[in-house]
Length: 212
Image (tube, rainbow, N blue to C red; front, side):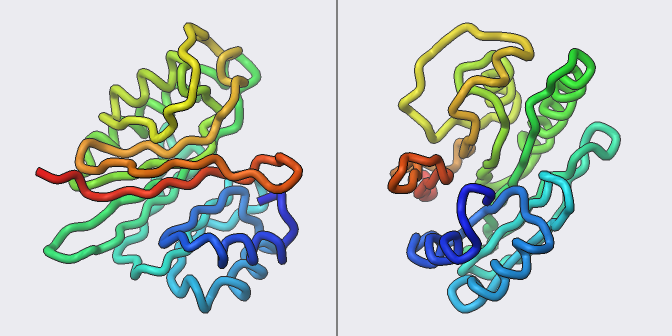
């Protein structure tokens, strides 16, 4: 959210056509402007507003049936989960996360524990699941590979180069924002979003239920 002004962000989201929008680093100021600018196009919202970088939010055109705040690793930085009902008793679970890159050995160890616990929770969630956000992990890092295997998720991004980076240093590689999905879904489109100057704004994916 820091990459755009308030009005530019609102205009960009309203023109995106997305059914569900996730926003990271949402502060009280951002909450006020996003609420007022998106309420007509996105009447449903779930927010975890904070003064630090860990504020999270969803804005949705579809009714939000459930909202849950996930705390792992002894109440570390929270993750935001919503459930979107789409008929026949089925629900799409979407989880928004934000991680800062760990800069010390202790912080790196805590990061690994938190990522493991989040992955276990996702693996135990029934129904279709999308997990997204700023992980500050490269898609080819050992940490992300282990996380995807544990959570039983796959990456929407296909244009990444494989590598063998490991340890805290690999957490600084880019791209570091991701949309993951489980085996009940398939990704039919994925795009990296940049403004006219090439500044990275976010990522976008289109998903559908996998046919039996």
